[in-house]
Image 1 (spheres, rainbow, N blue to C red):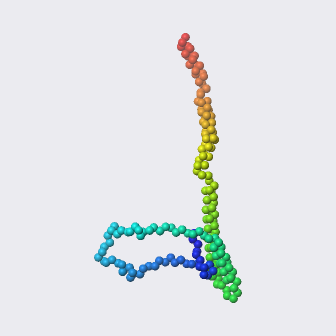
Image 2 (cartoon, rainbow, N blue to C red; image 1 turned 120 degrees about the horizontal axis):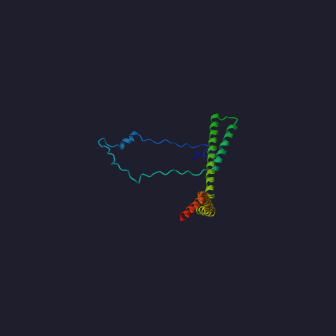
Image 3 (cartoon, helix red, strand yellow; image 1 turned 30 degrees about the vertical axis):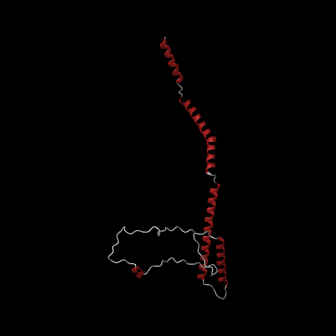
Length: 188
């Protein structure tokens, strides 16, 4: 978030206005370099030079100087007190309202910048508190080898034993005895 830049000549409390209007060349300037009527523009014939087409990089904003913001807020507070404290000449209510709105905007921008700085600090501290990848992988492998694999092996052994017991039918011994008896009868 970009804060207002202030003039130093008026106590640091007047914001500079940045003009966003672009200058438009006049019609006479366009006619000087105009082509003759007989030439027809053919698409695909015009080539643009590469050297002159520099892609603009996004502007990096300088960090916010909190002390300067505090001094600006203090200067505005003093100006408000000075305007309201004058007995001989009363300040206009509109001037006081604009000063109050400026104060509120400055406080809001200061609060937003402080909140963003707090969030960045919290994120960095979280990143720094995490162990490096090599240490985390080593810890996970040790836990897998020492606790997870023995637990899974014990569960598989119990499940296999239970399956073995459940899959053995109760009639098997009687069936084997009957089979043996029929073999004995056949041999006699």
